[in-house]
Image (tube, rainbow, N blue to C red; front, side, top):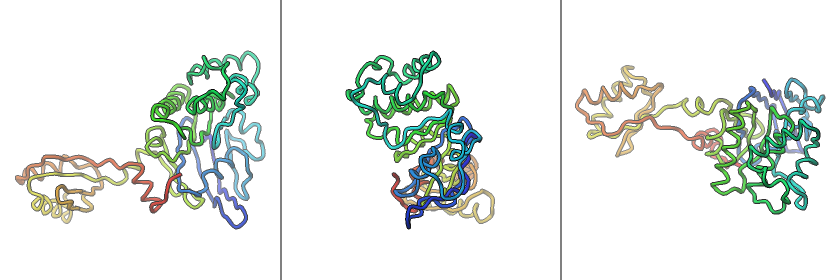
Length: 307
């Protein structure tokens, strides 16, 4: 594990921001952390990076405790939290040099490679005050990657971007992870982006992780077959009998007037189709409904607003 958070707790006055929170992340994965307003995401990120101390528990990064051996823990890590803050009257190159503390031949090579990767090599002499929001976000990612980063945290990396900028940042994160195996944590209120970028998600609510796992597995825990046919009453009868007898792994049959939603334990679309057509029911549409991350999030947080 590249990251281990164990039983973290943090209180600010009467407010319990984080409560007995545990989280792990394997090397090379992209993890999205999402949750309602005030859930504790920012507090968690700041504890992971050592910006604030936990009241209880510990954070290990690269095998070192962040709050006891901060320099070693963060030696190959980078982060942009809340918003990339640059000195507007200095050039992009000057900002990167000052904020990264880098120097020497190895730094020059890394700087060249990273700025080419984020498509900023031609703008290094320009003042950051002239940069668009998307360019500042790309410069922030470059800064996070400069310390030979094997682990980076990007807090709202697509915040304030237009659709083209969002697609560009998404591509940079995914491609860098694919090419170099960099482990990434992303926080975002854009659930569609999290679903497209991340391998795993962790949902935090009231200071605790309520679920964590691969997106593909979490969104396929519950399956629903959507059926349109020429004889809904007969289809309902057949499917209900199959459920009662245990002939098919059907959990529930829901009638939506123009189509049926059949909750199933496993993918048995071919068997459902064969049963209905053999009984003379003409099936015009049969598909497995794909649950979206937004639906999953709303279920887990009882409708809390993501931020």
